[in-house]
Image (cartoon, rainbow, N blue to C red; front, side, top):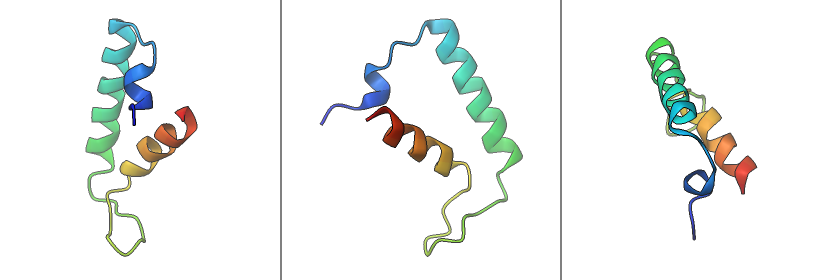
Amino acid sequence: MRDPLAAAAFSAQDLGLILQAASFAAQKHRHQRRKDAEQTPYINHPWQWLRCYLR
């Protein structure tokens, strides 16, 4: 199956801003964990939501 994020049309500048924002958010939320069985990092949730949204 093709990755929907890879198919999205982002400019190089847009992609740079997205990655910068993701890095900032990951750093700020590095100690937060979700309440699921795996205790996944909190920052994973928005990315999982985005992947579902783009499908």
